[in-house]
Image 1: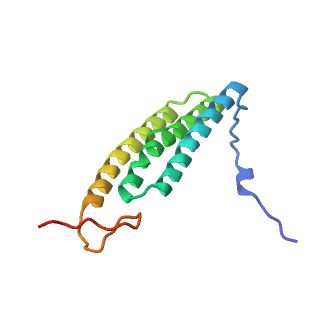
Image 2 (image 1 turned 90 degrees about the vertical axis):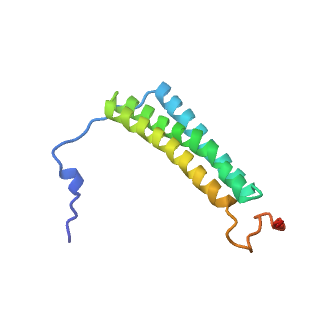
Image 3 (image 1 turned 45 degrees about the horizontal axis):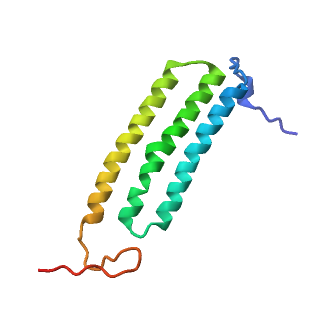
Length: 135
C-alpha cells in the first residue's frame, strides 16, 4: 500500500478564523448578489445591443457598479471573519480605483477604434448596410 501525505496538514501554523455572523453574512450576500446582477444584466444587454458601440456602452454598469460591489462584498467578508486589516482595505480601494481607470481608458480606446473606418467591407452587427461616404 502507498501512503499519501497531505503537505498542508503537516504545517506547524494553523490560522484560526471566526465564523461570520448573521448581519455580516446578509450584507455580504446582498452586495454579492446585487453586483452579480449588474454584471449579468450588462452581459445580456451587450448580447442584445444592435451594434458594437452600444455593446461597449453596456460595459459601464458592470465595471462601474457590479465589480466594485463584488470587491466590497469580499472586503466585508474578510472584515467579518478576520477582523479589520488595513491591507485588505488598501487592496479593495486600489482594486476599485484600478477598475475605474481601466474602464475609462478601455472605453475611450474601444470607442476610438469603433469609429475608425479602415476597411471598406465593415457593416453594422445588426446586418444593415454601411452608410455610403460622400466625397
